[in-house]
Amino acid sequence: MPRMTGGEALVAALAEHGVDVAFGIPGTHNLEIYKHLPAHGVRHVSTRHEQGAGYAADGYARTTGHVGVAIVTSGPALLNAATAVGQAASDSIPILVVSPGLPLRHPATGNGLLHETRDQGAALTAVGATSLRPTSVPEIPTAVAQAFALMRTGRPRPVHLEVPLDVLEETADVEPVAPIAVAPAVAPAASVAAAAQLLARAATPVVLVGGGARGAASQVRALAERLGAPVVTTTNGKGVLPEDHPLALGAGIHLPAVRALVEEADAVVAIGTELAPADLWYGPLPVAGKLVRIDVDPVAMVTNAAPAVAVLGDAAHALDALLGALGSGEPARQDVASWRERKAKDAQAEGGEWLEVVAALAAAVPRNVVMATDNAMACYFGALANLPTHTPSSYLFPTGFGTLGYGLPAGIGAKVGDPERPVVAMLGDGGVMFTVAELATAAELGIALPVVVVDNSGYGEIRNEMAERGDPVHAVTFPAPDFAALGRAVGCRGVTVDLGQAGAPDELTAAVRDALAADLPTVIHVRMPRATPREGGAR
Image: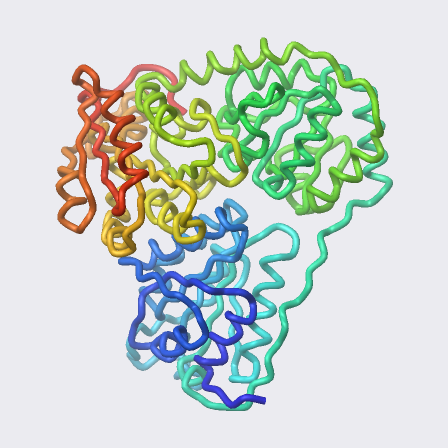
């Protein structure tokens, strides 16, 4: 058995589990970890804030399908990353956040140690899946194997791994622990048969697809074609079925046309989705008595809507079994084109002022683009239902937890994970300020990353909600900095497009195309006409 410090044992175990890149920031307490990264072939990407490290690990995980890793120091650094952990939990993304912890024999009431935090593990467990704390050097490889097993079993969730300061520095004989082979959950044959029976007699079936189906794209397509069923996706399911497929209605499960479609359906298949309020916006769908629910999470299976048939298991395996049980047959004949037209009208009405931006982007980006977006009006009102997406995990968006500032560092993580794939980050002028320092990270990496900042003069959604409530509208409208100049100041290219000027959409298209071919990130500051509170229905 090799003799190692706790820090080296940790890095060696990460490498054993296939980790070859980590995002983070070195600090006084994690230097024993950082010391060993180069020797074990783990590339480090230095972000400018720990929240950015967490979001970058998230974007990396979504794009590659591998666990994203962030390494931070203790106390404030770890708590900075906690928001990213909460977002990953909301979106079922496997990220591992590694940090030092208080020494084993630290006084119970504290003594003023640097970064002293009473219970880091409790804080991270509150927003993630769990926190593991090995208490000896030989235990570290086991803890890493356990963390990866947890993230790869059932519904993915983020995990925190905390190694006490003194354990990081101690030396001991270490026995490596191989990764645990985790088999996909297999759905019970009886529930598959019941689902097949319900669907075989359906004349107007509908398929709703969530993020839990990202690894089952071919099976989703096969089921839709076998049933002749239109397919609508949640935000995280966007692109599982290419949005130019004849049965694809695209994303925007909340739109009125989708509610009408589901209401008229005699069978609804929901795959890997919570049917969550964060996706539905205006209330639950009418699915009682006709819902076939396929999910790997038994708790989610009965959350928000009770299924007529529950198929508990991995989506790809469950759909393979369901297709086998259905056998060959004549698909239902539905007027999918009419439903697509109705939904498109709803999406365009909702997109409103953002449609020019979306159309300009659509003209610029290739089919395989990854859009790393933010909780901004241009993204959820504009791009979500109006910008076509054709592959799974290519529309990255912070659903549920609803953080701001996600798009830029997530785009960096996506580009690090798949350097040859085009990536565009899209944020609002309010949200980008939460993580704008990561422009320096992108510039240091020298990546071709268009960063499209849509400027509507502040927090537009909250401004509208204040107006609709009849409240005083304040604290939500403010002038943005010159984002193009800010980008240039930290080593990026910078372009400004004023949508109040003639020819601006073509300028935006050209700017994005140029940015995708550049050898540096490009900040594209899109100035919208001066914003005023809109009247009527907000989200």
